Length: 486
Image (tube, rainbow, N blue to C red):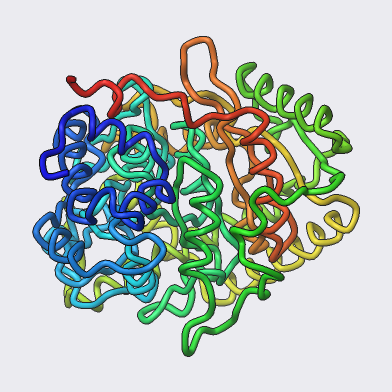
């Protein structure tokens, strides 16, 4: 094939990353042709979505000629947060970093390239990843492919829009409190946050946000997520801690019977916040399906967040933002100007300055005690199920702070993410959002499953079982490769 037709571009995009890699492996396409098809899709779809904010097409085409590994030639996008790739801009959604260009590859990026993935550019993210919507002032809002009037979630929102629309079959994301799982729910993708330290954060960071951050991806299929984690996971030299070694490759868990699991589920959001009927319907349907598949479901809340724990979480996030800004102040040699930070970021930064080192360490102590309570609960259950979010994706603009009232978005966002996705980050446990439900307006509603520390195997087995029982990959949003002109 030397000339790709619109039909070719669409048919390639219908395949997951494993399927696209198979085209190259069997000689049906070259890696360059695969990348060129993705470039065409990005150029056609991005004007409507604003998912990709930096492109590196020439660099990608050069990389395609020497791509080797299990994903040789498969196009990939990096989130513009933490992912250092030599020669590419890294802005982290902030005007403060608008001229910053990375000089090295993060260890994860090195491993992604070694797997054969070809880096086409960077995806949009809120400023420093601190909002559950992707609407930074620097790059503008990313629209949801299912309905462009709505948010795609955050902070891996650009990645989610790119994958859901078919620009690329999977894309990089990271998660410090739901940032993979929130956009996965908003866009009908599979989003797994791996166990703490499963993927490396070096060479610059030992950990990030005190161990709350996990690196991975948003995918259309469960097998892609598992195969990618096989390609990237494992400790790097000098890592401060490592995740428990898996019993077998994660891809081998896909299709392996999960057995009869005991699963706790809850319909209650944190602090008694209201839950939209669409989200309750999603979890109820999941409970029914899991019961039909032979699992034992027990309604029980495993994650009551006391005021003390909630306060500790707030201190943790505040200290983490302060850390991020101090890091970049050191790297750039100056503090941000007033107009280089958004209102919400500046609000969080001012709050964080009032937290002493001792108060932060007391917050860590509180969270570690909470982690032990969660570990005890998981001696009785194999997994915990809830809605991913407390409401469908809000309209664009609803979750954005203004100069006049920077706290308004904070309160609105708390209602949206009322289910405590952050519990997985606090405890280091793996968790996932699965696209099992759509509401009457056609918006995706995800369900969330968390398992024991180090136990991605149970999640991959269960996710593959649910994917087979209620497939989702054949459903495409209104703004997608399926809509490209023939």
